[in-house]
Length: 463
Image (cartoon, rainbow, N blue to C red):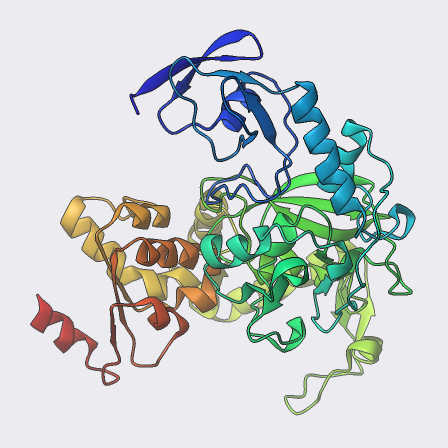
C-alpha cells in the first residue's frame, strides 16, 4: 500500500494514511459506524468478529467489516446503503435475543444499547439461548455472561493490552464465552483486578461491583458527575476519570494520558473505598491529658476518643506549633527534622525543604525518594548532566533490549509493567535481574536470580 490513498466515502473523496482503516477514516470524517468488538483506544487491535460495522463496497459481492478493512486507491465505499443498514439491524437483533431485558440489564446504557437505539432495534424475534449463572466471586468485578456477545474484547484487553493472560475464549460455536484461567470462577483465578476487561466490555457483561446497588441486585448505580483527576497512588501518573454518586466515588476509569493510555491497575481503578471509610479522620484531634503516650497501647479506631479529643483547626495548628517551639527551644534546629512526601509536587517539596532549612535553621530534611533514587541521580548527573530520566517507560516499546534490576514493576507499578510485557511480546529481549523471583520473569528471555548483595559485583562483571 502506498503512503496515502484516495477513495470515495459516501460520495465524498477522502484521503487515508497508510495504516488507517475505513472505520477510522469514517470517524475522522464525522460518519458514525456502529461497532462492538472494536475499541478505539491505544493498544487495541481490530478483530472484525461482531459484524456490526459492515459497509458496502462497490463491485464486491459481500459486505465488509470496516474496522479491519483498509481502503484501496479508487475504492467506492458506502456506509448507509439499505443492504448495509439491514445487515447491521439483523446483527443487533440476533445479539439482542440473548441479552437480558433492558430493565434488568447490568448496564442498560452500554455501547450495545446505545447503538441499538441509534439503529431503532428495540426487540428481537428470535429465541434466546440458555442463561448462564452470574459470577460474583471476584471482590471487585461482577461477571454476567448473560449479556456477553463473545466479541473477545475482554480477551484482547487482558492478553494484549495489560498482558496478564488470564482471560481466554472457551468452548465452541454458540457456547463460546470468556473463561478465566482453566474456566475457574473469576474470584479464584489469577486475575490481578486491573479492570481493563471491564473498561473494554461493550455490553456490561463485566462490570464494577461498586455500581451494584446495596441489595447486590443487577441494577446499576449511575454517577451524578464525573471529575478528571490523577491517580493518587504510585508515581506512574495515570490520568483518571472519577465518577461520583451522592457524594461517594462509585467508579474510576482511566483517561488517555501519556503515562497510561487509558490503563489502570487494581489500585487506581478499585482502590477508592478508603475515601468513604468510617475510620477516616475528618476533624483535627489532640491527645487527651489523661491519656499519656504508651508504646504498648493499641488504639481502637472505633473508640479513638478514649485517647484523643476533637479540636478546631486553629487549636490543633497552635498545639503543633507549640510542640515544635518547645523542641526548638531545648535543642535548636538539631532537635527537629522534616520528612517530605512523595505525594507532593516538586514545588511543594521545594517549599517544604526551604521551610525546614530557613524556618528551623537545620539541614535535617529528607524525602523517601532520596533513599532509592540518590544513586541513579548521581549516575545520571555524571553520564548526561541531568538527574532526570531521559525517556518515559513507554519508550520500552521502541527498544530492542530491556534490562530490569532493582525494581518489581508488576507489583509496584503495574501500568508501567504493561509496556515492558508488550515489548517482550513484540520480540524485544527482556532481561530481569532480581535476588527473588518475580512475576515479570514469566516474560523474560533471561531471568537472573543472583545472590543477595552481589549485585554490584555482577554489574561490574557485565560492564
